Length: 147
Image (cartoon, rainbow, N blue to C red):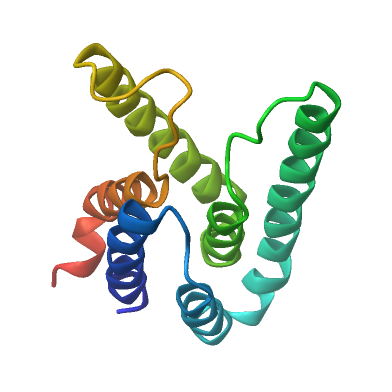
């Protein structure tokens, strides 16, 4: 039930992110509270390391982009969501989610550029691709949920 709730919140957040290019704090608060409640405490402790690693990598990329005078490729809201999902999914699940999201968003960006609907420097919402990747990961584990 927890994963379906996460998918519901991610889908609602994806719609908002696609329109406004921002992640509402309410979505992060709902997912964080649910992750803390639904994840067993021993897993939560181990998974908090994965969430901290998400932030460490983001801050390193942010510093590198600043030094190179480039724009940061992901927003703070995307990182908040990814780190919260890392609390419940662990490092390997978070990495898979990020990899699938990156592939999906890259394909969509390439298609938009090819169709001349966007330019190479255009911004694109990332949460819709996180939600799609999460749904794909749920489908992979569907035998767990079907009695």
